[in-house]
Structures are given as C-alpha cells and as structure tokens.
Length: 263
Image 1 (cartoon, rainbow, N blue to C red):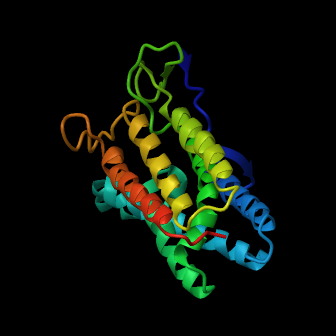
Image 2: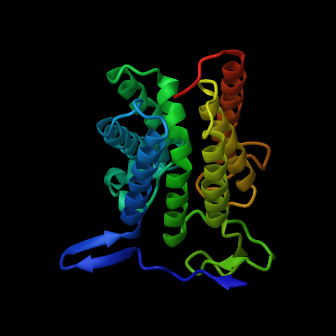
C-alpha cells in the first residue's frame, strides 16, 4: 500500500508571485503541443507555416481552457458555481472537464479552419495526435493536486489519499496518464505517420479516448455530488464518452468510404 505524498500546490514562489503546479502542467501541455506540431509540419513541407502553427496552438489553448472550465461547471459543478460564481475564474484550484474542453477546441478550430481556408477535418487530423500529450500532462496535474482519486481497492499499488480518508484507492489519475496520455499518443503518432483518409485520424482519437475513459471510470471514484447517473454503475464520464465512441466510429467508417487524404 502506498501513501499519496501530499504535494504543495504551489511549485515555486518568487516574492508575491506564486507558480502553481497546474500552471506548469498547462505550459508543458501547450509547449509540447507546439513542438510536436512544428515537427509534424516539417514532415509535410508547404502545408503548415510557422505562424499557422503558433496560431493553431493559441486557438487550441483558448478553446481548451474556456471550454474545459465551462464544461466543468455545466457537467459536474453547477451547484458550486451557483454558490460561488468567482470559482469559475480560479482555474489554479482545478476543475476542468475534458469533454467541455473538447467542445471548446472543436469550436475554436472550426473558426480557425475558416480563417486559413483549410477543411475542418484537415485541421483536426493534424491536431489529434498532439492532444494525448496535453492530456497526459493534465492527468499528472490531477495527481499532484490530489483530485479525481480512484475507488477503494486491495491491489498492491493501492494508494491512501489522507485528505480523503484512510482507504487504499486506485491511483486512477496515473491510469489515465498511462492510457489517455502515453498509449493513445504512441498509437496515434504511429497511425498518423502515413497518409490516412480525411477524418480517420480524428475518428481514431475519439474512439481511443472514449474507450480508455469509459474503462478507467470503473476504477475512478464517481463525483460525490453526482454519483452514478444510471443503472447504479454508469458515471457522467462514461455517459459523455459514449457519444465520442459512436461519433469516432462514424468518422472512421465515412473516411474509409471516401478518398480524400489529410495532409
């Protein structure tokens, strides 16, 4: 049995300036996305300029942060928002929804694709392999913040989160880091290394994330203020992931019936 190390949420203090671990994870996520996007652009010269890559990361960051925060409010914490509206702005305290962030990113890239005269799925297929890197950084941030802990367990690597209780629990944040971050990144990076029908890479990402998230929810403690949403086992995360899987399957099916190749 392991014990959660109780990290200080502030990584570094310089005078009145405090740098939170969440902020560092955001920097790693978006900085890594920029580096990976720049590398991908070099493998297909002439398709993406350096300025477009920078704008791409900016739009993605804006959509992810705004969408993630609003998604957290709508899907998981609406009562908290009503009692403390300023909480919406305190992003360093945690509280981001991937599914809300995904909707924000989709909206941001839709407008960006129109601006640069590229097809929406051409943009999304370019971006999709970069997303798991940011997801992995985010899950490490969740672990450091001691949030989104798992259900009680008797496995040897069960971890006690003293700020929760004295029960050994699944370190589900690390499971998500491993599957949604590392495994999904490696698979998508390899899959996208060759030309694929337009929309296929986006579809494979949606299927991969949706399936991994649905599976890990069986080990993650349901949100206390929501619990199970149906059947005494279905969580909000699983409910939101199901449309992702279905849409991803549709995109892959449609992509391989067509002929356009993403670049």
